[in-house]
Length: 249
Image 1 (tube, one colour):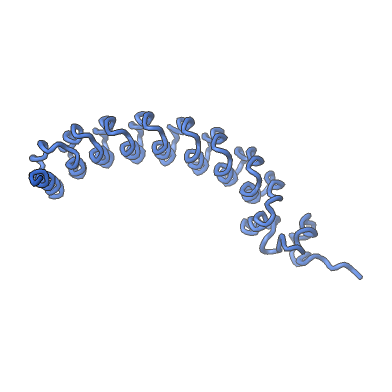
Image 2 (tube, one colour):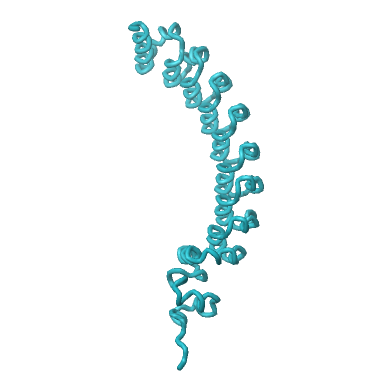
C-alpha cells in the first residue's frame, strides 16, 4: 500500500520540497496557511518561530528581510550580533531592542531614526554623548532626559525648543539662569516654575503673561505688588492670592 502524503502537501505548493514537511507538518509544529516559515506572511512566519524557537537561528541570513527580522526576535541573543549592520532597517530595529546595552555603541550612527531611538533609550550613560548632536530632535530630547545633571548645560543652547524644555525641566534650580532669556516663552515658563527667588523676581517682568504667572509662585513677596495691576487677570489674581495668603498668616 502506498504511504499517504503529509497533510497539505500538494494542496499548498510551499510544502513541496520543504525540509520541515516530514518532521513538523503531521506533528502540528507547522500548518499550511497558518504557521509556515516559507510563507511571505509575517504572521505565519512568526507563528512558526513561536512554536519552533530552536529553528530561528537558521534563518538569520535568509534572503527575505521579514524572515530575518522575525528570526532575530526568537534566536538566541548571542547569535544576532552580526545583524547590527543588516541591510534592512526593520531587522536592525529588532536587534537594537535585544542586544546587550553595552553593544549599542556600534549602532549609535545608524541611518534609521527608529534604530537610533532604540539606541538612545538603552545605551549606557557614558556613551550618550555620541547622540548629543543627532539630527533628530526627539533623539536629542531623549539624551537630555537621560544625561546626568552635571552634563545638561551643554544642551541649553540646542536649536530645538522641545529639547531645551527638557533641559529646563531637569537642570538644578541654581543653573536655570542660562535659560532665563530663552527665545521661547514655553522654555522660560518652565524656568520660572522652578526658579530660585532671585531669578523668579526677574521673570516677573517677562513679556509673556504665562511666564509672569509661573514666576509668581517663587518670587519674593516684596516684588509682587506691581503684579496686582498686571494686564492679565490670571497674573493679577495669582499675585493677590499670594499676598493675601501671606497677610492672613
